[in-house]
Length: 238
Length: 314
Image (cartoon, rainbow over all chains, first blue to last red; front, side, top):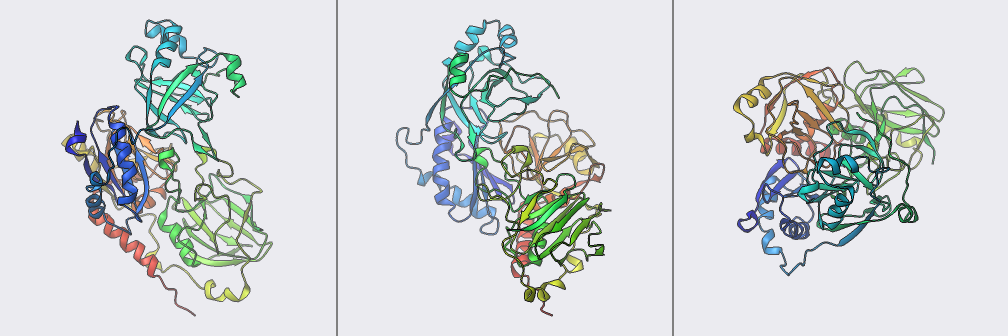
């Protein structure tokens, strides 16, 4: 949509410019955003300090001593000329994440199934059937915002966020899904736990914006064999 | 290498430099000194590089002992600091012999003090920065603890001392932490989605800094605004004034999450974030609109001042 007519580019702060490609989440935008992210470092060589893609936008951080916002915006307008267009040239990696879907580690699995008028098995089936785009990383190191979850299992965030959600918890918030890389407060509805490390100080984040993720249901033994911590979920709200 | 032993870290003291650049797309918060102005002067006093790690001490109450000869500088909130009960001049350099004890009391005004050492504190570097973002729980990058040892690069040589010990920041360049000048704010991407009435409320209203305010962000209580509702989540920069559903604006600071989903009414420039970070819960503040070009000019003047700063030799 907006991608064909070009994104809107405007100043955000004294050291940041916002590029907006549209207002609605659109899986087709992922490749466009990825292509821009690949081209921007060349266009802003020597002044770029950070580049943060999200669902429909890219935020470009730069050194205000090296350039002012007009220069940065002017250079960013030339990005389309620098994009090498090839079929799926800018596609991300495919990542499979195993999940033990169980009430012991996913306290919202049964309530969510009831709210959706589905069985637990159907919820698992639909969550594992999806092929999810990683749209952005944020919230905490390595936390990937993924979508879109099938509408039949989409449920809003909890009204009262939990004080502590264990590392590996797999959550749903509306049509988004994610895995908590580390224990943290959180309001997403937790339906299972993933034994894969999503962030380490050596390798940083496992996921990148533009990657594609599939979830695979595993049992408790496999979860433990893969290094998962099956300590039961302890409730606590803010 | 020896350096400084922390006897009492005070509440929420951390090591900070200019922050972790280039990793926000991995979800890592940049962190960095919350009061850029005071932080830069601490390094400037010692001819340090602009990015050397300093201690950011929150609300004084800090005690530490030198385990090597140290050349230090202290800026920011005035905590009536003393070495072995001998008072220090605020915003100046000082020397500590091995065994000397540094004591910071509670500041009468302001919140954050910066303690720099010649050559910078050699604490753990991760992804190009020594800045601690306590919430992220990364190894060696949390709040300072009692008994912790902060290493230095190399011991100070006695013959370099005289050039430094008289140095203090010129009075007219020391910020007035009691200033109630309105905070300049640049229009944000969703400014146009707020009603005229709400924009008037925001700019003419007085806000009180909420208790749940820290390096992540400052919560403001005052005339509530009608939030135009959630936006598609995107990166949020330092100084972002976002308006969640309850209508109370929140200013995001250095330890913010990198992605946010609330409408952005405005953005505070870095030097205004510095000023805000020195305010305490319960204090009042107001805003006025500013132009991006003016904010960039002011930042350039600040950078130029530090770049061209020459200390007069005695």
